Length: 387
Ligand SMILES: [Ca+2]
Image 1 (cartoon, rainbow, N blue to C red):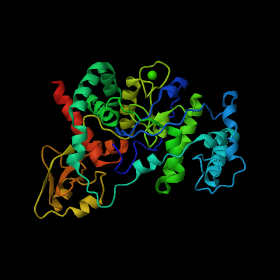
Image 2 (cartoon, helix red, strand yellow):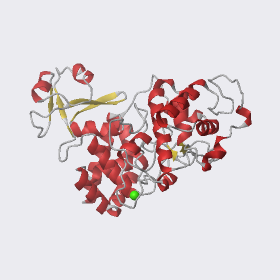
Image 3 (cartoon, rainbow, N blue to C red):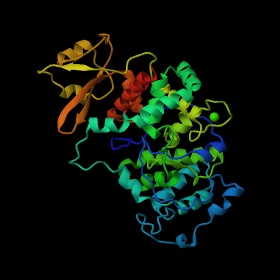
Image 4 (cartoon, rainbow, N blue to C red):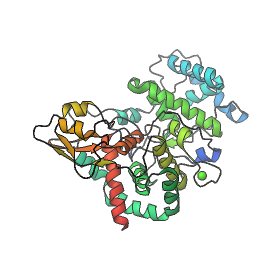
């Protein structure tokens, strides 16, 4: 999904258990394009390098001669490397202080990181005249490829999905739908070197530099924990990894070894992806058996502005909604907190719905109402198609 809307995939920097990933894990992590972005970038040759200062990392610690002693402007390292920038040096210093990284090893790595202009093009907000359309967005994900593929994925991983639903309380169809929207069940997981994508965003995208520096830090910790080659891990333009397109911080906090084979592999092990998606939603407050959303009736005299300004976190009960001229269709309990969600349709009338807690939880995975509704509708379509 791209994050044409607010954000890259799952960030969710809330507290969670740190899960140890195995080496094999990283070797197999792939890239992803949040929600199936087909963007592909030029791929520089992968260079082996580790950040723990072990013997294997030594070759990476050699700075390319072209960088040594350079006085280039911090903003424009000519060959795309990040070694000689003051902001990168400060970041390295921080990692050394906080986590005991080997400074020379990190300098060697950043000397080989390449800025990816295509990452900056892909993350850029839509032009100001652009009118978002829920109907157009929906059509991208509610298609035969994802529905038929989802039914097949569900059948193939029936046991794991059932087990995840039992352990975490998240329905199988929601787990399948998320993996379908993110990567078409692992078919499109991203081709960027994660280190390049995250460094480009951390140091050349000021708007979200803090967020991406945090994810870059998480990525370096993750690869160190696993002894993995930082240049071998591929992901989306935003640095999201594997079938579920987890950002590195989410991998460390929420990924699980759901098939108990001793390693977490979000790229090539659908069972680990299934358990990890379910755990992510559970840790963000998914309530088993609770509704996701309700259709809504809007009176002609309704005042929607204040409800929309209040945001997507559910906080209005039936009586409060009625004061604004809004009510839920169906069987919403009067005391259930809801949020008015608007899904613009370009020049056509906006679609409205009332989101409940579980709708909000899906937006923790990807902070977009379009995303949450696409996942929800795909989940419904998958359940129907199984019958
Ligand atoms: Ca596993």
